[in-house]
Image (tube, rainbow, N blue to C red; front, side, top):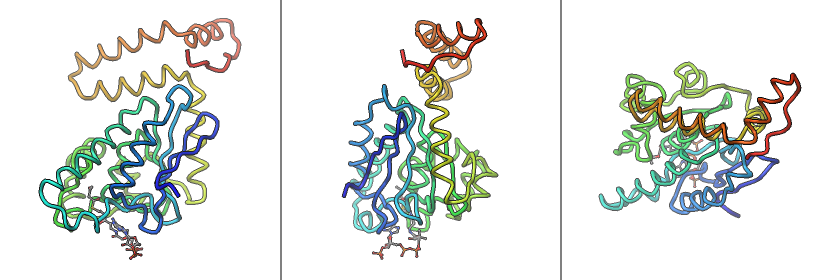
Length: 258
Ligand code: CAA
């Protein structure tokens, strides 16, 4: 059985971390399979990706502690780089990504969810960065992405105390965008993904790039990032046909991704 599975449903990809016996903990093999699966996604046909964990209990319960327990300094740094490179690949995947967090999202699991564009959680989800309780720092981007998502104070509180938070608190601090009963989570994630997939794909991808790239630079540069991407949409057939439909007061045709 693959440790990372990819299922395609119409224009939506569903990527599942499939190691439920270890609560989907991320060892070398899971991370390298994740890397390969991300490389295999055709962003011209898949318009949105959902990332989730197998089983009822966990999204991902972190990096594999047994594997990390004997690492040297150099090996620890290399393991951090391995995870960071793959999570950055996920974060910069051209298409939108939704984490469907169906249980524990601790350490590397919380970090995996934060590398997605949007987080939807089940009522049973638990988030946290428990690393300082294990004698390490977060290692797959947690010190960076958590502060950007929930603000410096909340991120420092969570990371220094290693306190896990449940779904309602994750919603209140903006770490997740919505919480659903566990049995409804995937249907809701698929509904959101289908809605995204129904919009003009080139424009959606340009929005992701504008937000991701623009928030890394000052406002004067950021608005130029947007201007260029905004302009690029005007050479697409999808823009022409959607605007023509509006002007002619009719429903537009399905977007063609060109
Ligand atoms: N690494 C390796 N194995 C893990 C694991 C992890 N992160 N999390 C769970 N497992 C394994 C357990 O060892 C156990 O295996 P066995 O059945 O072979 O004993 C199995 O998954 C089930 O786990 P539990 O019996 O512990 O389940 P539980 O319901 O009693 O507890 C839990 C659930 C609270 C999530 C607990 O498993 C736990 O605390 N896990 C570790 C969470 C954690 O600290 N994550 C951060 C890791 S560090 C990190 O991720 C660094 C980074 O930033 C890259």
